[in-house]
Length: 355
Length: 262
Image 1: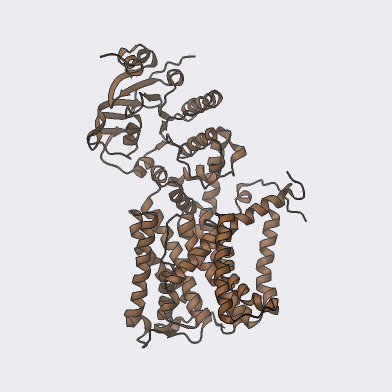
Image 2: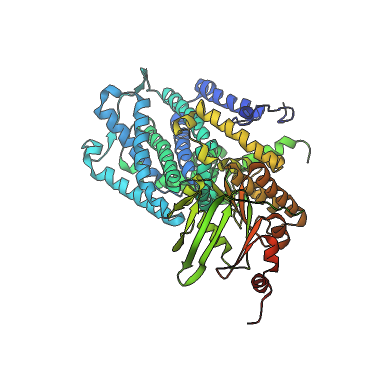
């Protein structure tokens, strides 16, 4: 079946406003989701789960969160790691102190809500400052939160090194233990969260974020309230990031210390958003895939090619090639991988004809 | 064809407004009114204070002296979104569209004050949120039809030519269904056909929706043809006010435009 929208007529506004108006897109996305749920568990190894799929999905969710703030609302943030830490530690404390609520869905949502509250607090300066200055203000939040989890011992349950560990986890009686179970649980969560994010950005609230991003003065004059709009973006963004942080702690690491959510994490997520595409949910996934997969591929490449190199040499090469690839992609398409994808789709609509 | 219409009800009255930025007096002691249902033009040479006047009316600037009475209520300092809530919409001299969004989304933002469903329903996009979205889409489609921009519905406005962007901006203002529409140089930089189209839209808005219009324009042909009354500013002072024919014969206005040896 060719990628054509010819003949697909929309007779209601509802049909015109669906997420994927083109039938082929709908089928493709459905096939990808079904494959992720049904086909992947048939062949995936433990390595594939724990080193590739789980990190990819969790970091995609964090990138979606940051993309809402940076890509859709235009507020630069370098505090992602801190907000992930809030989600992780809030979830940990609920899990630890209220054992009756040992349900991962509840625990993660709590982590997200706490992170949203902290996000609103640190979003307040955004009313007065913009751009680089706001980036510095959110950087301060990163350092403050790092400090908080290292120094306030109650939050880490008075463990000597500040390292916390979670034991058995379950959701609605389903014990989530093996890598496959963790993968399926995360996948389900991320699919739902992505749908929610898409609904938000295509609706009224998403338009208010984009209006503030594109022209804040005009947005205010036609009736948007800058403070409320910006804080709602901070809240929703931190909510997703907090859930991602809780997942990272509970289902990726199992035991962690504040260092897991330091400034490097913030930069990593920001790079995903920029490389993937600002203002695109698909871009969040593409960016996460790029950042998670490329180093692994580069690391394995010499082995596959049969070239014998020392481990140190390989890791140096990995950094160099990775850096060069980031620069290359940003020069080729400053709007990110998502734009490359949409250009490819435009071309595909006409293929095999040139015009 | 010259229209002569009579208006009785005052929609907005400006009384003795003065506005200065530091030592620069942008407006000094300006008074005029806008009657309900009329097309009121503000003209004047560059730097006369026309845009400052519009910015005062929609709450973006706060005049140091004087008062603005809108629908019979004297208003104190207000924020721009409060003006929007009271039914004042505007377009801008330099197009202020949301460049990353499509034509449709831009016009949909004009209806933001009427969209009330909460975050939760929007996140699920069912029930009230989905209904509201479709309801407002219908209203927006009427405006798209009216302005004849169906073909660019889904195009990001950043890619549109200038004349169409101006039209989309008018659409965004109309989507709010304003009582008072402020147009800041709606025909600047347009060719003759685009100007004729825009004049037609302005007149139709006034006729069909009964919207009161206050516009700033430099094209005297347009101003004299479509406006009911004209107020003339020069160096922040009012030098003329009346129907187009009076303004044409007003010596102070002629001097301001042509220059005069003092």
